[in-house]
Length: 246
Image 1: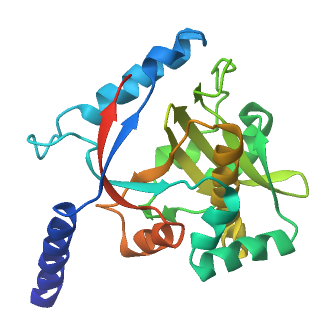
Image 2: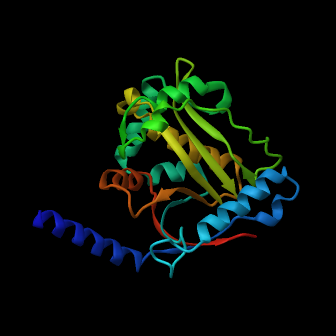
């Protein structure tokens, strides 16, 4: 027990040292440029700004999503991004492609049964899954189609034989594409479906959202060592972020 406590203290101390030396970035959500889009996108952009910049419930001197945002700074093209990945990440993507998996933007509502199956494919991900979530069936989304490339909420999928086996929902707001949800079917994890999904999302961000400069994947602090290792392979590293609304 004492050894376990010592390891936890050491990990917390290392996280504190990391937090004090994080690279800083300023991310413009470009809310003012959402006026020619459906009002939905202006509302959710303002909502995420309020959420990200509210006071942290446990550390009131800092903002809720200020320290330790796991972000990848996107270069000018997918090839440069690809070359910067760790070799194991590239091998995982190639494995999925070799096995016949494909990536594409998907219509979420056309794959509700497959998405429900993905959610229910395992009771443990980064900890025990909530039983209510496992029993709940995926429901249709009602997001209106975006009218520009500055604000959007696309869904992407990895498919095998026409069936979605991994998916991600991403919020696009000005300079950021934030991976809000990402799940893979447990039966396909070993085949590299989630790495292929992330690679496809990065390619899509670089190709179709010219204002996006950063791809983000939740938080660094609080993630398990395994998840941190996975994020690092794809160049998602902790940053200190200033969120600019307009």
